[in-house]
Image (cartoon, rainbow, N blue to C red; front, side, top):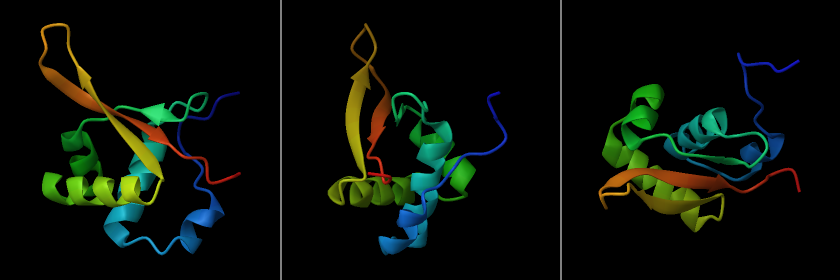
Length: 95
């Protein structure tokens, strides 16, 4: 049975010394991640709305998470060449 009303945050997250904005953005990415591939593609606006922060704060948090090796951000493009939401690959904290 698949549960859709919660997601799991590994205990190791508390050992990383993340700032609150980084913690909440990482949790948001976990919430949207595909459990089989550990990737997701929420828009920056969606992340900002769900975390109750602005897009610049989201960008700052994503940059720090990427610098720490917790995520890998890949830009995505539509067929017409315009940008769409980024793909985020989440590092496993359980290894």
